[in-house]
Image 1 (cartoon, rainbow, N blue to C red):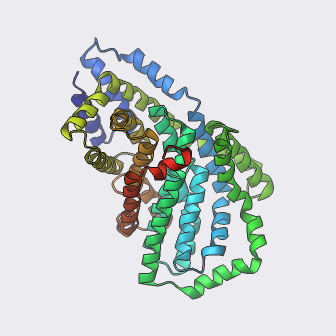
Image 2: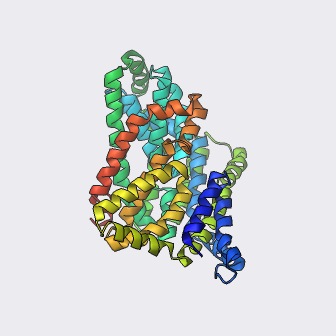
Image 3: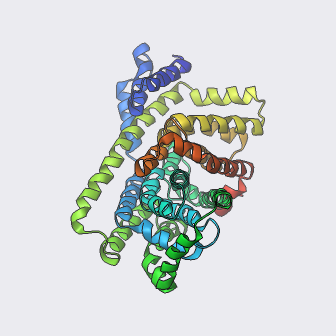
Length: 433
């Protein structure tokens, strides 16, 4: 059975708009239909699919989803934004920078880019427009900064990558901290350039920030400190060895419930059932996808696709590490435009991991590179999930948002280049630099 034929069938199904979990499932059974002697028959695939979702680390995903929804309903994004506005509001490009930092911190709660855009954007886009910033710029800012939600830990794609490659979830979480801050600083650089060029309404900004400062630092800190502690608890419990990533995810849910129900009192017990239903509705389709991707990955392994791809690329480029990394990065950028991040990680990580090992690239470093590449796809048509979330929030057409996001994406790409060239950025905190 030709591996090339299997991949052609998969991409044809995607082109025909077959849902991706359906395309994965159909393609997985295709070889056994053509060749009854092929070892991956129906029973084998069902066993592999069920085995793929019978995973302890997977519990971390649903817990982080639930924690993010509770925090969103509890108004945590507003409290984070107010805290950062107190310090940054009056500096040049201060308000856009506050949005970026809020996305950075909220990403450390939700682990999801679309969730970060929805939670932060629903609150900050109207504020930015009221302060005189153009609506397309305000939307593009949140849409691109929301991509930090899958880079700064905890990150759902990081969990999926570790499931596919066998790497440590905790190590990848810690490794994502510096890259997340690097990308955030790059986005702030473009925000500063834009505001210098187009100007800001200092009077309106001053009135908003002045209102916060009249409350006093202690009042603002008291209102936001519980929200600020959330990423500290999650990452601190993992890094100190107190909890595994899955256990830290459960702690984040308990903490979110405590501060939303009893500290901020922005959530009622009667609302919890709807929150649980929303979490299940978000997670259940992901389980189908993970199961189908696991079966598909197993079929590709039996067809020796990872080895074939590795041998072909290594032979073509003569083992030139720089050339291969360039080609892989370009390929991932294109894939990110066409396939959602989760499925792309589950499909491609097992294929590229052997080749990266052969090249001497640390798989934790490659995990950062892969997720950052694919995160750019959140803001690039036609898939661009963040674009559609932002468009729904602001009413700005997707194409207009994409055009206004180009400047941010250029700086995002600059950060990616730095991450590829200097693996120490990703590996420093885990002692592999």
